[in-house]
Every structure is written in structure tokens, then in C-alpha cells.
Image (tube, rainbow, N blue to C red; front, side):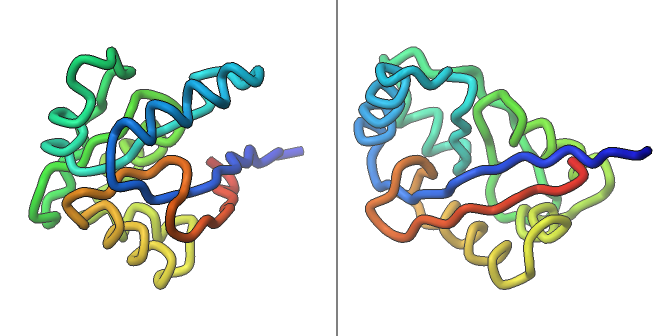
Length: 134
């Protein structure tokens, strides 16, 4: 039997790194493993925002037609996006579109493209999505 692996994730949009950092500390203090969190955003924002907080390592995701370099903290989400990049996805939205409906994939790409947005705990909308067969 061919069993498909599912990765479940919740998405939130934040405007500042201290909110992301505080959220991760709060949830890990409640027993969640830090490896359960992924942060996705523009590389220039993640690299600048996380200075001095010892974030997890960033994985670069150079989608050819995205106007800026995308990065994600090392982990399952970054691995799956990198696999889509290797499969010739040309934008973050097209990589996400492998698992999500196009509208949701574009919304996530737009959230990442908003200069001060980081994905973590939400001050905006929250959605839960499954990546099936990952």
C-alpha cells in the first residue's frame, strides 16, 4: 500500500520579528518542539529582522521569477518548497500551488511579498492547510 504523508500547518501573518520570537517562545514553553515552526518571508526581511535573536538557520529559495529572494527557516516546509523549486516551480505561488488552490497560493505569496510581513502567529487571518503526499 502506498501511504501518503501529510504535513499540516497553520499560517499567520505578522509585521515584526519580536512577535514571531515571542510566539515561538510561548508555544515552546507550552511543550511544542521548536522544529514544529517554520518562518517564511523575504530573505532581506528575515535576515534583518532576526539579528540578535539566534533564529534557526535560513534556507534560500531562489524562485526564478519572484522579484526577491525568498527564505524559510530550515525544516519540513523549507524542504518541501525546495523540492518544488527543484521540480522547476518558477514562483513561490506556483510551488505552493502544488498543494493549495491557486487563490490560496497567491494569497500566501502576496503575504510574503508585503515587506514587513512574516508568517507565524496571526494578527491577520489564520488558515490551516494540508500538504498531502509530501
